Length: 332
Image 1 (cartoon, rainbow, N blue to C red):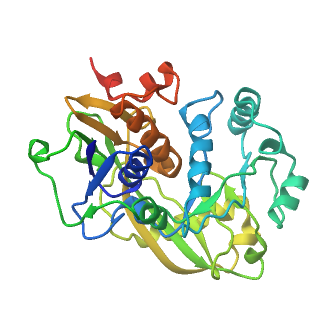
Image 2 (image 1 turned 135 degrees about the horizontal axis):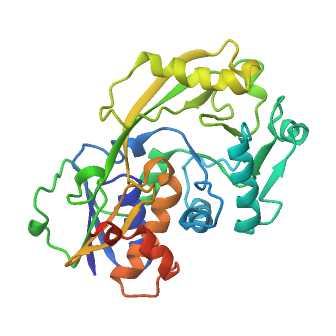
C-alpha cells in the first residue's frame, strides 16, 4: 500500500517509520528544503508525558516513545530523568493524583522530598518534586532524520491540492495546513546558555513551568516561552531573559552567571482541548497534528494509530481514547 505523508516534522516522519515497519510504502512530501524545518527542528528537546491527574492518551503513549528511542540510532537520546518541581498546591494535588491513577512503578514515577530531589539532581533543590525516571532529552531534528532514514523524502515539494496526490492513503501532518479544524498556532522560543561550574553539576531535567536541561557539550537549554498571540519564528531578545527569570524563581544558584549563547524560535500547533488531532478525516485522508509541546511523545503514538487504521488492523488504544483525539470530536 502506498501512503503519501504531507510534512517532514515529527508527526510525518514518525508516521512514515511506523508504516514502513508494518510493510506499507510511505513517501514524505515536505514544502521546505530540509527535514524538520519548523518546530520539530530544535537541536534538543525534553520529552515527558503531559501530566494530568488521570491516566490519558499521553501516559499510554509514553512507553511507545521509549520503545522507538531504543530502536533508533544517532538521536542524542539521554534518559536522564526529570524532576517536576512542586511549586504550589495545584501541582501538589495533580502530581499526587497522577501517581495514584497512572499506576506506574515507583522506580519510574514517585513524589520525592526536596532532600531526595537534590540527591537525584546533583544540585540543591528547594522543592519537593514528581520524579519521572525515564524522561530525558533527545534531538527532535535528529529524531526526524532517524525516522525518515529509509523513507523517500521529496523536499521543496508543497502540496496545494490533495486530489493531485497519487496514493492509497494520505496523511496530513503539516501543522496548520489542515483546514476546517480549530487549530491554534503557538510561538515558543528556547534559549541556550553556557554552563557554569554550578550548573554543570545538574544530572537531570528540571521542569517548573519552564525547563532547564543538563549540560551537553558545555551548554544547557532553557525553555520555553508559550505565546498564543504570536505566529512567527523571529527571535525576541526579551524572551531569553524571560526564560532565565523562570529559572531564577526556583533555582537562583543555577541561574547565576548564565551566559546566553543562542536561541531558536518556532511555531507549534495545538488544539483547544490540548490533545492532538489524530485519525480519519475524509475519504482516504488522515491527519496527525496539534501535538503542541509534547510532540516527541505523542507523534509516535499517532503513527501507530494511523498505521493500524490505514491497514485495517486492531487499534493500539481503547475506543474512548481514539474518540478523544479524533478530528470528529470537533463536529457540531
